[in-house]
Length: 153
Image 1 (tube, one colour):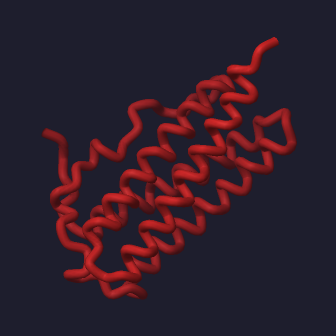
Image 2 (cartoon, helix red, strand yellow):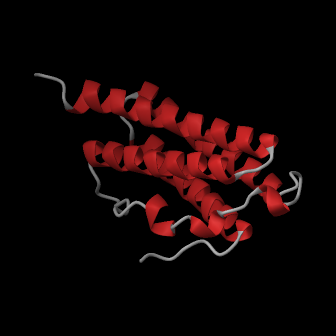
């Protein structure tokens, strides 16, 4: 059995760390892109991940009253939201896109699950909004993968 989150602060710290990691990953990928349009997409997503981090930090700082409004986090398993592949400097574009899709799917699941345990409507709405943004990122990467990796010569 995997390790569970022990508190609301624990799950927020995990989500914040994931957003920082996603920002760094997308910033690095943007710098490696030959296609300026795709570089722009990665740069935009990197900025959005920083926005997610700021929203989560606002929750942690008490701008949203959490206390009993986010119950049941101790039932969430950390392993459910982790990606088993690490980015590598020599990773090719296809592998980077697959990793990006996996990361976005894991983030989507985390925010969707947090929305289900949030008892306050404003927290539920925040987590659902974050989940939707992560799902949109994943779809964009899927489209890019289809267009660039699976294209027929």
